[in-house]
Length: 384
Image 1 (tube, one colour):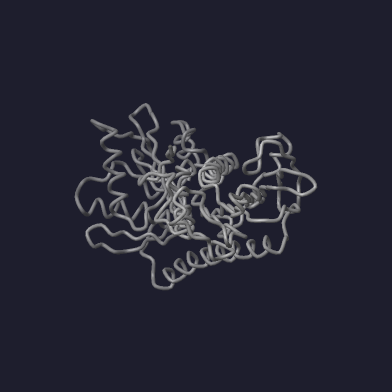
Image 2 (cartoon, rainbow, N blue to C red; image 1 turned 90 degrees about the vertical axis):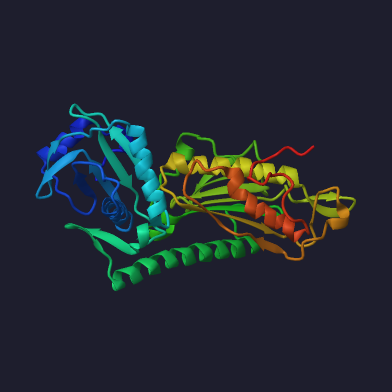
């Protein structure tokens, strides 16, 4: 793999590969021409792409000739319609692999014609299978190139994916228990709370360390949920922002591993005629806005998705949804609502569409079919 970000690669980088005699292997492969439309060509293409995803990620470079695995010449690609060719390859990947992979494409202008790079990210939710026309095989890579995974390797890959999911759920459970026991970075006000977690897969698969202290050094924006005035401090886990002293009404903990934990303790503590109510519009709007900010934080840190987004409401037994239809409005009969998780493959994903299934479940707990603040496509709407 070329170490530069994809958007920064130029023709000179290919000449460096030639000069250094960089050979094909685990993270790079050269192809003179694009795959054709024949079934065999598509199967070969899908095997190449998925093998990178199932191993360590890497670059598939088209328009580059090799001799015994070493890049010898950049020939470029002759394409009547580059956009059409790229759409064809993207369609093949979308329809021919299961589950879908994360990748990026870029045409690099060169003197002999453009070179296409398909950069595939290492996947933590694999293994990914070629399903084109019943091919039904899994591929990995080593120094010699791609090869079909054997039973032992498949078992290890599935175990890794399953283990990551279990680690994520265990972390989430442990944190909810700690919150309920008042084991928090800052002392919190009593009452019902919103708990939002962003749990990057790579934080559990191959723990990374991110420079989260930059938020202290540069005073970058890190407000807690539904807070304008706030303080920040460094702690063992990373950096925490909090609103309110000596008892905080909200805090956001950004872990060095890239995990974000945001807790808010005032939005759900309102009453109407002596009845505890969830202010549906206010709390859902704040959630949408804050998830958007959290995704931006992960982008700023340079974190690689996917990311699990998890929402939990604690201390909510007896609360009702703030709505005019009181005859259909039932009190929540559980103290803690652990809502279904969402897997986010793109850090620019819509926060509304990500959160809608979760907030629908909160309305379900109050006797409603779904939230009245989103349309059926998951877009936030302004109720009249």
